[in-house]
Each structure stands twice: as C-alpha cells, then as structure tokens.
Length: 126
Image (cartoon, one colour):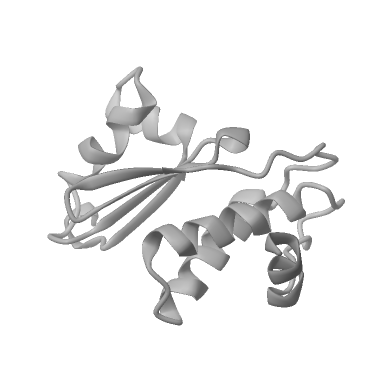
C-alpha cells in the first residue's frame, strides 16, 4: 500500500516507530522513500508544529502553542484541514500552517468533535 500512497501524515511517535529513527527531522525523507513518486509527507510534532516534506525539501512549520484541555481529535483536525486546503489549491506550507492553527484551536475544546470552522481559523490567524 505504501508504494501507492501520495500523502502521508502521522504524528512524531508514529513516524519514529515506522522508520526506527531517533531524529524526528530525518523521518519525513525516510518515509518518502516508501511512497509513490511525488508523494508528500507531513509529520506532526505537537507544540513544535509539523514538518512538511515534498519535492525533495523539508520545511518546519511552526505551531501555535495553546493551553490544551483535550488533545483528542487534534491529529484528525490537522489532517482534515491540511487535505481540505490542498483540495482548494493551497500550497503545502500554507495548508500546514492552517492545519496547525486548526489543531491549536481544537486542543482548547473538549471532545473529539472540536474542529474549528474555516472562519474560526481565519480569525485565529488574523
């Protein structure tokens, strides 16, 4: 399946477990080698943001640290916003920035149905 995958997104622990690498910054490129040509890799690292790797380069996208009340659903929120933005034609780095913002909002809410609206993400980023 990995050889057919065009977008990989995971958290840092999952990326390290898959690659058996200790240095998180090395995991996206390592994962990319197993994926379809041209695939993108996004590795989330909580309050440190995420790493986006595509077209042979990696970019660290900073987070928006918040006082978390519930982290359930933060990864799902991140992935959903990331892919929704890409479907709208947003570049990877901008999509990841919006995804980081959405996850930051999500962790300030209780429950797994905590994803913000697009307008809430816009207001947060403003």
